[in-house]
Structures are given as structure tokens and as C-alpha cells.
Image 1 (cartoon, one colour):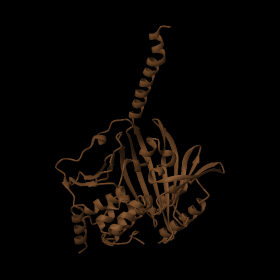
Image 2 (image 1 turned 45 degrees about the vertical axis):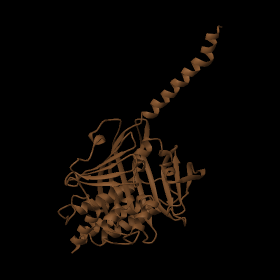
Image 3 (image 1 turned 45 degrees about the horizontal axis):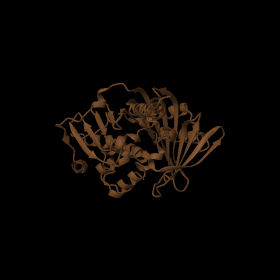
Image 4 (image 1 turned 60 degrees about the horizontal axis):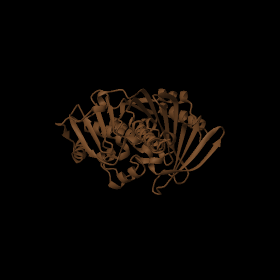
Length: 127
Length: 254
């Protein structure tokens, strides 16, 4: 909790410094943010509860590199309209949403086995 | 001058010049690069971070090979010139075949810059057109508008410093900032300049939260051979059925 609050405060401070009128970012601030954050997993070596065939690995790898095609959502199960939206938005708003999908899915695997987002019909599955 | 000399001066010599110019241009155009790089990607969300690594190989024919490697999850992504994707796992000798129309080499930032499309970060490939260009506080700012009305990203502003793109801001239809991408640590490699550091901050209005992604490029090589450029999926690789994966995941829930 303490680390989470620290992260939020740091990110807020960073966001204030890098507002819409600022076109350059302080690399040291970014590096500091990452230094302070907890490493969830150096994907996917430390993932717990992988099944024997490595299917969850396939899902995660699909998201890392093919997230803009919503392949990871196909594997998890979602409706076809979401896949269409991913493609129309050039990979879920230029690949942004798949990145967050990945984080949320990894956290879910670490905490609950990775079934929370299966069959989720929402475009943003973690919203 | 005799007639033959006149003919040579007026017709033959210029003709030879044009033919030579044509082939010279062709040889220059066909001397496309094959470029490779190592990428470390860090993503930060909710106080937690993940780190992934990959090697990217952009081939001269417009195809792409991505090799992700870490412990037992060694994976290859092969993207053809026409955007047909294969995903191969050496550990299990399994392949996900023929995913079409979802990814091409031109989606990769390294390919974009190596092939002279870095000026607008490849945005024009996604049906964005320039609508404005102005100087602001020493920067040059260009605005691009999406021609696709259904696109959730309606506008992109690209900011230049010393004629290099250093920042791209993506807006939704309501003018809210979706994401900001910062490009820095430009270095010359071969005949092109490329940002070694790409920072992406994504804002989620509904949640009031944001994520940070940092891509660090290194070991960039131009026209240097590597076995990954010639990688092919083994003939005996077992095809993966996505429906089977869904079924397996559902069964693992029980």
C-alpha cells in the first residue's frame, strides 16, 4: 500500500511536470519511477501456476507482440466486436490498451490464477 | 558536323544518360536495409512494473522477425510482407499460423525510421493527414487529423526539435489526451537517426490513472547478417488451435 501511494504521488508529480505544454520529459524522473516500483515479473519466467502446455505463456506473449490485434483477447475469450475495435483503433488506441491488458492479466495470474478476464465482453477488460 | 554526330549528340547520348540514371536509381532504391535491434520494454502500472525483452529483425523485403527470449518462453513472431503472422514456440514446437491483416513491419518504430518514415512517426500510414504546422517556443508542431471517423484517436500532434520528432500527443474525439510519447537519445546508425529511448505515458480518464512504458533500444545493426533473418518455422511444428487454448484456459479455471 505504501509503495502504491508513493507511486501515485510520484506519478502525479511527474505528470504535473510533464503537462500538455511540455514536450520533453525528464529521463531521470522516469528512471526513478521504475526504480521505486515493485517488479511483478520479468515476463514470463517467474509466473506461477503455468499449466503444462504453457498456454498462459502463449496468451501473454500474444499480448506483448500482437496485442494490437486483440489476439490475447481472442485467447481469453471476448466478442468479435472488441477485436474489430482493436484493429480500427490501430491496436486498441495505438497499442496502449493491450499494454494495460498485459499488466492486469499478469497481476491476475499472480493473485488468482488468471481466470478473472476470461470471457470479458468489454473493450477495456479491466475497467 | 556530320548527320551521325548530330544524331549522337541530340538523341543517343541523352538516351544513354537517361538509361544509366534509371538503373542507378533502381539500384539505390533496391538497396534497402535490413535492420536489427534489441529492445528492453518496461511497463509501470499501479506501482508495479514488468520487464520484457526482444530482438527485432526488419528484413529488406518488408517482413519482420521478432525473437522474444527469456528462460523457457523462447518465442518467434514472423510477420510477412503482406502482414501474415506466425507465432512459434521452440520449447513446445508449436506454431500459431496465418493470422492475417493485423500487423506489418511498418508498425515497428525501427522499421519506420530505417525506411525514411520517421518524420511523422509513420502516422500517415494510419490514414492521418496533416492539418496544421506552426512554430511554438522554439519547437515545430505539426497536427495530424484522422480521416477515419470511427478512430478513437482523432488527432495527433507531433513536436520537433532540431527537425527530429521528440514528442507525439494523441487525442480522442473530445480533445482529451490519450497518450504522450517522448522520443530521446537520438543516435545515428548507418544512414538514419533513431531514438534509443521511447517513453509512453497513457492516461485513462475513466479510472483517473495512468501507465508508463519505457522502450530502450540497443545493439542496432544495419545490413549485418544474423540467423534470425532467415528463420523459418520447422516443418514438423504442431499448429495451435485458438479454440483449444480457450477451452484449456476455461478448464484450468475449474
